[in-house]
Amino acid sequence: MIYVSEKAKEKVIDLKQEAGLGDDYFIRVSVVGGGCSGLSYKLDFDNETQPKDQIFEDNGLKVVTDLKSFLYLCDTTLEFSDGLNGKGFHFSNPNASRSCGCGESFAV
Image (cartoon, rainbow, N blue to C red):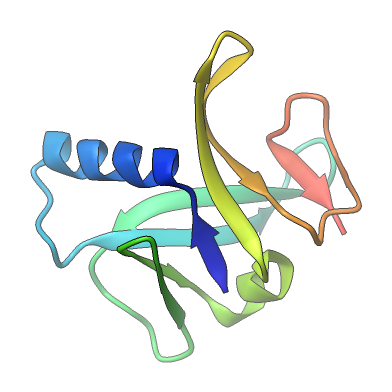
C-alpha cells in the first residue's frame, strides 16, 4: 500500500484544479536511479494505467506505481510540508536505509 497524508491530499487536489485536470487523472509515483543516494522519487499526474501497474486508493486519492517501483515504495506515505525548513512533497519511506541531506534521494 502507498498512503497519502491529509496535507498531501489537499495539495494534490489544489494542483489538479490549477492545472485543469479532470477526475480521470491520478498520482503516479515511481522510483528512478539517480541522486546522491542512488534512488530518487518521481511524482506526476497521469490518466493511463499500464498492465503491471499497482493501483491503490488512500484518503480519497488514487495512487498508481509500476511493479518495480512498488518494491521500494511498499508502506510509504506521501506527505506535504509548507514549513520554513522546506516546502513540497516528500516521502516517509520505511524501506529506505538512508537518504541524502537534501531529502531528494534514498538507498535501501
